[in-house]
Image (cartoon, rainbow, N blue to C red; front, side, top):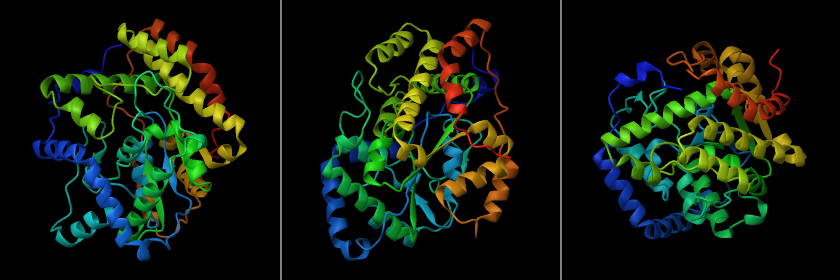
Length: 380
């Protein structure tokens, strides 16, 4: 497969020098910032301790499956708040940082197309998977190549649990929100852990048709790989922000099947990109299915739905998402209508797989996709 031609003409993305310096500084002094986070929590204990962490909402799946647009949608609900781009790299003292920002900002930040070049426009106020830095700090092997990266209830870390809960409460307090929203592609490997921590959590898992999804994943990987040749800081910047999905530093999630993980690694190292992504797609959703099929509580907590249905029958799917999350429609009608009007399937590139590559994707993914389809809610 070759990427679509329209993307080739665009200028390479470059890492802002100031952001890169800040990211490296916070990474080098993370122990200090963790202690400051504990201090912030102690100072604010009287304010935050009474706040319940009520039915937090987690949006998770493979990248390029629709997690960003779902998070963007829900982030505009009046009851919810999420980590934002502006919360990086200082995810450690969310109350103080946001308190100061609210009192010093002079104008709203401008939205620009994000580095993925996928039509989605973001600003510093847009939701982002910033909490990944906390998972990485308290579980330092969580992205270690060749090691199982699934986190279940048996892996509970009391220090993480306490710090994480405090961080959520501080964010709720400073934003005057009732419930927490988190986007995190890697959380698909942590559903058991999340539900052991918050049994009433709601999880949203968009699933995209394998051929289109794998084409998008490959296009994104090539974009970041190409941009990294223009700006060698990109791989480090991605790693510092908890992103290992694309580019020269690409890593896949090891779900515990050693043979399958070796097959993915061998496919990629051997230049067999389609095979590697197809195997990874199947491994990710096979892991999701096994957890749901073995645990009725996990099945109730997870809404697994079609990305294509979200784009093509938007109003019905948005209503299903709101119902699953137990979110009122009051104060959200205009946002619902706007998203329903504007959502559409990508039209800025087309998969260009050979017949053999399509057959390969079918062989690896079709059985898993059929099982996922049985979980999709009906929208009519």
